[in-house]
Length: 262
Ligand SMILES: [Zn+2]
Image (cartoon, rainbow, N blue to C red):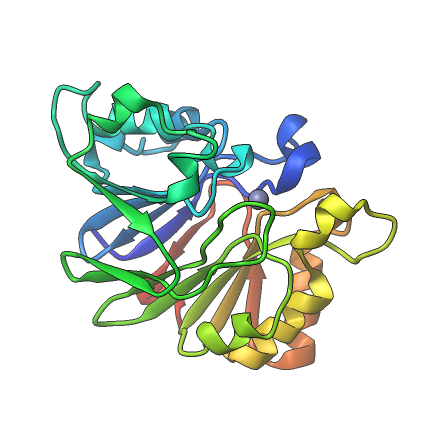
């Protein structure tokens, strides 16, 4: 199994999800022979089954929730069932903020019994899964408890900068990344309701990429204003402007880390 990231879905925020203009399924990450699923939004199980070749959830080693919002967490219970062979094999790990267990208990209580271990995400926490170090260096600014996730292997460091309001701490904490994957929900701040302010705009994303200076950046989790402006064109423009390889994810896109992380 080569190290890779498979974007099952690239939808961000409500309307792109509700209308399924893009799939809202999560991201399947394979690193050092471990299979990790980040933010299983609506449709994750279906997308796993429909992949060619299909992705077998029974081969997952961990499911990670960055936060409890429905576009990130809707399929968490069914994916735990699938990871644990319907609950018959107690296996796998769940990484989750405390509030997703308590405030809004999005993980059903009986399903919690199926996983081998539950790890609570906190700012500054880190965990080892074989040769993969999983850490959450920073609590993001978002309406609910939310953490960005960093995967470090002997070969590279990959940071998933999930939903957040922009703040300088993001640059500082993700600085040593080889690859960053950023949730870019908004094109700009115009004409939007206050609810949407806790998401990154394209301009803020550019500032982040420039500041962090990774080898490469991938944009994903697009809201309506981003979809309308063709994210692949926005990514190409950004790459020209800042000189750091930047691409836009599309549904089903597979990123081979060994071949493509130049
Ligand atoms: Zn959110």
